[in-house]
Length: 260
Image 1 (cartoon, helix red, strand yellow):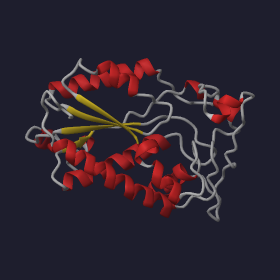
Image 2 (cartoon, one colour; image 1 turned 90 degrees about the horizontal axis):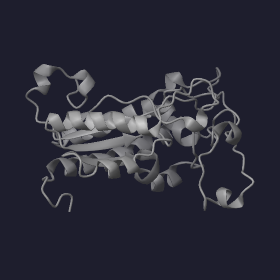
Image 3 (tube, helix red, strand yellow; image 1 turned 180 degrees about the vertical axis):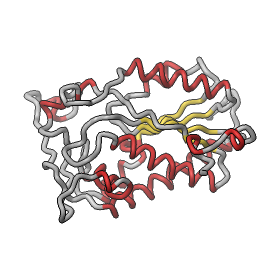
Image 4 (cartoon, helix red, strand yellow; image 1 turned 30 degrees about the horizontal axis):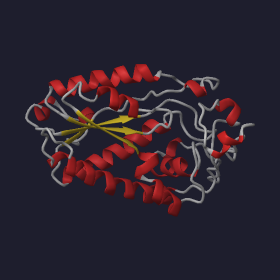
């Protein structure tokens, strides 16, 4: 039993444990090129969350990892078979209910650990602010937490099912990566199409990208330079950074000026 993982613990332990911080991993169910499993985002969230919480627990922080939500917003991947969508409003209601549960059990600090780019939770944090005793924090691990180190580890900082995600998959759920007998990935190069609007291509204007027009087999980024060692190196940095945050959060007093 790992006491920082709620799904593995029992009531005999939980009823006497004064957890101070909860972590809610958010995944998705969607295709990732031809080689990665539909549960890639969920598996990543679990791999990161479990290691981050373990490191924080061993530093004295009473953190608890909640079960991962395996569905995300997939409206732009709806043309791809068995992409399983929950609309943003639906996801928001699910998280709101879980926040109310935590509040009722006296846990007033929550980190949402998001592993899916289609999940946009910042508006939800604003909506819930002031309506609950639970202080909400958000980490999209593929953005700010790892943006700087990705540039030093990987040949290409990709978007979806490329070198970064494939490296994590090879390191932490390699048995699910589709490969030939010699280990070569069964995947295309993850090439993406440009729109006819230069401002969109430059990033000055954003859209919800229709994935079936953007990609060939859902991949956005070349995965073929991926290695397990690269995934492990990225994980090490993420665990170091995020576990320190959880330790700091656990020991920080909640008062009228929190978090300032």
